[in-house]
Structure formats: C-alpha cells, structure tokens
Length: 476
Image (tube, rainbow, N blue to C red; front, side, top):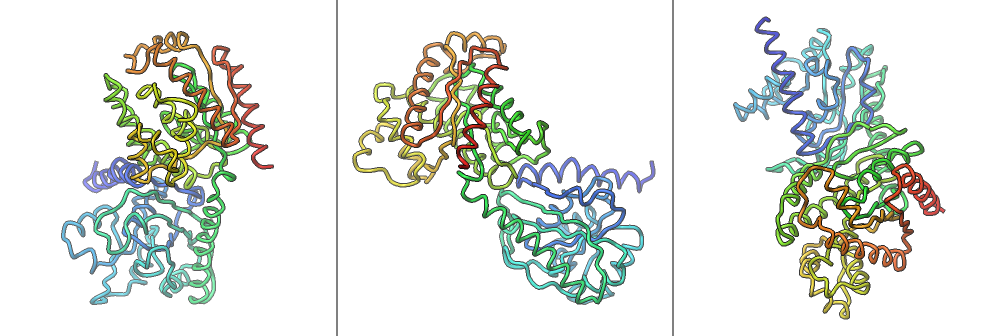
C-alpha cells in the first residue's frame, strides 16, 4: 500500500471511528433527507452558517464514499491563529483556504479547479457565521460559482441546533441536539444574482418547513400520543413495550423508550442517532442495578427516571414520531416507588398530591405541604424545577403475581436487584394499581389492566386494541 493510500485510509477511519461517533454521542445528530445525496457523483453542498460545528454536521450526512472527496471552504485567517487547529483541520478536511485578510488568489478559480478534479465542495453562502438562528443575506460568490458550473447540482441544507450547541463567541460547546435537513439537489441556471436568491429561498424554505413542524409539535399532548406500559419487574412490560411499538408502527411512526431508544416504521426498526441523555441514562441505570441496598439504589434510580423523562421530551422534539410507547413512566414509577421508603405515609391521597406536585411545575397548595415534606425528594425536585414530568396519555398495567414475577426473574441467570423480592414487588404492585386509579380518576387517563400471566401473543393483542382505541379517542 502506498503512503498516499495509507493516509487516505487513516483519514477515513478517523472520520468514521472517531469524529462521527463523538459527534453523535456528545451532540446527537439527526439527518433528514440523506437519500438526496445518494447517487450524486459531484455536488455543491450549501448550508446556513451559525457555528464551527456546521462543517462536522455536514460531514456526518455525507455518504461514506464522498467523505474524502468533499472539501469545505474555510477562512485561513481564522484557523491559522492556532497552529495545531490549522494542522488538524487541514489534515481532516483538506479545505479550500480563503484568505480574507491578504486576499491572495481568486477563491472562485481555486474552487472551480477543485470541482474540475471531480471533487465536491461545502460552501456557506453567508460567508461567515451569523447571529444564532438567523439566516443572513447570501453573498454573490455562490451565484458566480454555480453560474460557471451550472451542470453541477447544488444540494441545499438547513442546520438546526449548532447555533445553541456552539454559538459564535462561545467558549465551550453544549451537549444539545442537532438536526440536519438535506433538501433535493437543484440545477440552478441564470444570472449570478438570480442563482444566489434562488438558493437562499430554497434554504429558507427548508428552515420554514422545519420551524412549522416543530411548532406544530409543541402541543405534545395532542400531536404525540404517549402510552406507558407499567408493571413490576418480571411482568414482561419491557417485551410488551417493544412488541406493541412494532405493531403500532404499521400505521404510524412509533418510538419506544425502554432499556434503549428505538424507532419503528412499517414494523421495521428505523435508523437513528443516539441522544446524549440516553447514553448517560444507560450508565446510571447500570449503577442502580448494582446497588445492594434501597438507600444506595434511590439516587441513581431517581436520576435515571429524570433522564428517561428528558428522553421522552427530546424524542418528541427531534424525531418524527406520532406515538411513543414507554417501558414504565418516570412520573408514575417515581410516585409508586415512594411506598418502599415511606410505606406508613403512602396512600391514595398522597398519590394524588405527588402526581400533581411532580407534573404541574408549580408550587403546591398550603394544604399539601405537610404531606409532601415527608418525602424530601419531592422538595428537591421542586427547587430544581424538575417537577414537570409528563403524565402519559394512556396507561397499560401488566399485572402479574409477585411469585410469578420472581420465577421469571430467576430465569435470567443474573443477580437480582435489591428490590426484586416477593415482598417488595408485592408492595410496588399495589402502589402502581393505586397510582393508576389516581391518574384515571383525576386526569382522565385511560387505563387498561392486563393479565400478564397469559401468553405474550394474547397480551399484545389486547394491548394493541386498547392503544388504538385510546389514540383514536384522543384525536376526537
């Protein structure tokens, strides 16, 4: 293997095994319209520009075979401030350097030379990073470039999220979700000014479409129907959650939040990028399972439930799903688990107050305070403004006898968790039933209680029928 081919292979490996995974784990990347890049031999990728993350996000959308054949335009005067940064960017991306200070050479001619070598380019028509969330007027360079090579398709891209993850003048990046919307390739002809305006309209159109979709999804209760599958460990709720999501996806897009986040369409898993909250939750959940006492179990379990609720909101915001099935419910689980720590104070009245306190986001009434003081976790959650948990739109409770549940748990061949005893599971079962009565009575949430000791096929069939009826009723 020649030295050149070794270098190319190493660069590609860095992109695939380091940059893409890091970007996905830390920031999360959802690419929509990736198919618009398939089958293109050459193209000009044009996007809005708010952040130094933009180029990395665009590379994450590229087909693998195009990674090393694509070159961004970059400002030499900015990146050359730091020798190590310039060297890294130059090695990984092989940019077309634009010197905005000395203005040596002709950027258009240099870019055309790269295109004529059969390469692709990434260009930000605004010329520089704009104010967060705003698309500045495009400079005419893109129009003059396209006019000279009108046979090369231009792919418009709208980036959403990097203006918050790493905005201009920010010192540190924030682990926030990012969205890449790839539009259909355009063949633009005409005068340079007309080409420039036409391209800007295309990208602004992608931005308006994305904005409309996000605002349309703001009233989550109506636009994204959530079904919580509740039950004690060993009830089969995790298995039922995934099977239910898969069956429901034959008629609509469905997400399922269980041990991991999965999306289904037409009964098949859908490709997705992981959310940072999911990775953190998986790690914390593993710590909770290793706890040897309820005291040590409490904090990691509470944290895991809060992250699961966060995942629910992030999934609603960023993924295109009309329905989400959750393995358990952060709100209902947290309320029910109080029975293991303050059984003497646990009652239906407490459940009513706890559900309200955890979901309202506001202050409790004076009459509720004495009861809630008995549970310091509720006070801390209120102080930290974490008491905005979502009440599910429907609940399926998978009911099994604790003895049966223990028998199923034993077949896993794993060490039992601290709460997985017949006594504790019996208490949790009664607590969950009580919480279900409260949300059904006070919040008009439809609840279906299933006999979890029947066959999985029978339980799935009844759960599917209930979920479809509840979903249709919510839209009426």
